[in-house]
Image 1 (cartoon, rainbow, N blue to C red):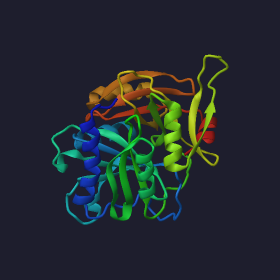
Image 2: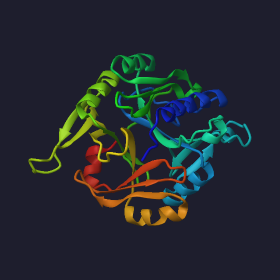
Image 3: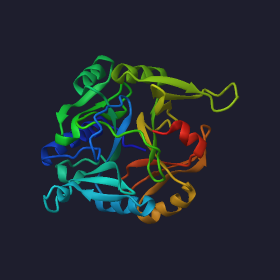
Amino acid sequence: MRKSATWLIGACAATFVGCATLQPDLPSITEAPTGSRLPGKIVWHDLISDTPAESQRFYHELFGWEFQPVGARLGLGDDSTYSLIRNKGRLIGGMVDANKLGNDKDISQWVVSMSVPDVDKAADAVKAHGGRVFAPPTELEKRGRIAVVADPKGALFALLQTRDGDPADVEAVKEDFLWDELWTTEVDQSTDFYRQVTGIGHRDYSANDDARDQGYRVLVAGDRPRAGIMQNPFGDVPPVWISYVWVDDPDAITARVEALGGRVLVEAQARDVGGRVAFIADPSGAGIALQTWPIQKLAENSK
């Protein structure tokens, strides 16, 4: 699902710093200021792609996503180093053209950004509790203040202190990001790490009555589920954050993936916690999950 090497993580961190340097003003992740922060929530998804044109076509054809170059939005001509991603008009993420950042390594992947009220304090907590800071807190203009870090097991993510506030909790729609999940080798250790860094709590859920069922852990803030943590299901994949897109029919989508330049990593299958899931990679090699979800469970687990 993700290329594994220390240089990859370091280069990915440098990519975000490079965006701060190359772009005079990265826009806010909200259309209108909310003035509130939701610690522990995954508030943004960035795609780092070394095949930006092919990746845009891939996601547009599969999900209908639209890509808006930030340069054009700011009157900077055809500068497309960074593009906003919209689903049905709503902001859901961004894409970085890795080719314009002067890096000769393939660092294509999806990176999640987790909300924190104080990114400097959170970055210090990362170091204090066994994680690693690859890019220290950096100002990204209207976006806010960001740090790129890894947890003690090496899973890469970003800490984001938004300038205008975090996106409000809304009911997900089809082709939106539905869920984010950490695959790790140490569930309890990882749970404690994210609690120390963000203050987030957790709950454990049993998928069935089987005594062998180890359940499913959910990071929660108040009464809101924010992300999942589970034992890594693939031994050859290093610890990683996986993002899920809500779809009606993963089989219909996986049938089109290869023709659009991507790869099917895992065919659609039933999932103990509900729905059916498939894993795919886009033309750049960045991995993402496709997930169906019952309406009643969506209401319980809405982000």
